[in-house]
Image 1 (cartoon, one colour):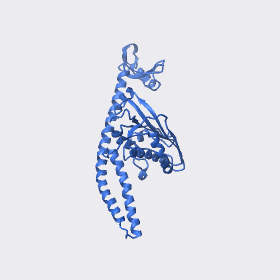
Image 2 (cartoon, one colour):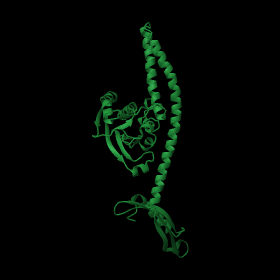
Image 3 (cartoon, helix red, strand yellow):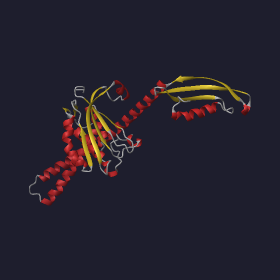
Image 4 (cartoon, one colour):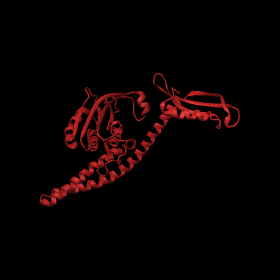
Length: 329
């Protein structure tokens, strides 16, 4: 029993007791993990039949016949299959939500175009009195804010026209840093760690800035009492094994963008919904998450996005973008 995984030991001991119980049928049929001397875990399938001497409750077990099969590869295949199924279901759900969001945003954007253009025409009247001018300016500003929101929805639904260019992510982070310091406030300490010799990426600059700002705003809201926000860039290489476990990704050279805070973190239930565009833990204050915005941009920028967090452990968010020399034309 010393090789049996600690988490399985109690269940295995109970199964052996049942197999040797004279009132039972003597069958042992279990799967469990073992830990080798090198610390590696393997799965075993054990099946045996216990034979008894005597009759009734007083009979005694005299021998057992059975076998042990290593089923580690089967277990790994099952786990991988479940993981792929979850990815497919998530992709189908996001596609359905994206279509709905895109249709609504497209129609709403047409209405906003009329509102904004009419406001501009009215503001062009020099005879317009000051009080009415302020009201019309408020209408135009509200319309432009709403138009920014629809652009984010269109980006998520992949209907927005992107203008990808080869850009230096370090330079973009540096340009955005001044804006971020105003957005996150004085209670949050902003630090940047920009990788040297960073490879260029092919992406839409406006969308990249929006992703960074949204991630920063979400981190700020996760630290109501203040904290530390860190933005990092660097080069990384994703190998064939990583691509096999993440079918949406191709092996190759990538540029990493990581945004980390020391806020409250997320539990597993929250983490599983982080890529849904309308999901928020902030009630009516919620902004569109940068995570679905990353997935919306991923078709054009060929980016991958992921988050790992636990309650009390902060909120790391990592996105990878193919190096421009590896990006599709």
